[in-house]
Image (tube, rainbow, N blue to C red):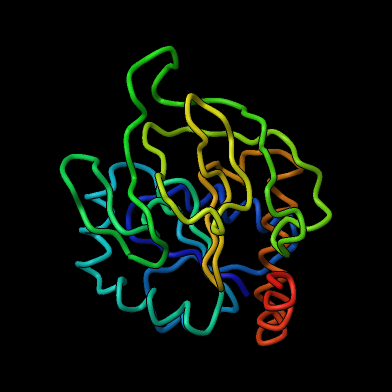
Length: 215
């Protein structure tokens, strides 16, 4: 079973609908006791970084998420991906979950429209990563005004060009994120979600697969 964390900011029902289309059993909940029983967890997000972090703090979800990824996979989507990183410059510097290194920054004013909205081609850097292995690099649907800036290129599974190289799919250990909305990204997005669910269901077997893929 896959859990979807309900903390008041996210496309909960669109993600749940996508999983149901894949015949994946899922639960949308704010109760940690229920989410603890899941095989993998999805952290969605729409809105401002600071508001999201404040809500996670209020409900005690930050400690829960940090503990969860010690044992099971987590996938952040859109704002949910940005929350995985160290900090964000949105509405003042705000600390994030710190599960991945990097800072969330606003796109610079220039020749590109902000927000970055619409379909964009993905550039895959780690095609053997279990999350996307055997998937054809395709277009994905983005809606965001901020992007992750990081110096650890080993995190980058795929990027998209939009004035800068935008981290589009990231991953380290059991922590994954997509800046785009996989639930709105056609067949490719559904297949990515399916891979995440399969990895989650494998449990401890996943650790061995990931270890092999990185060496």
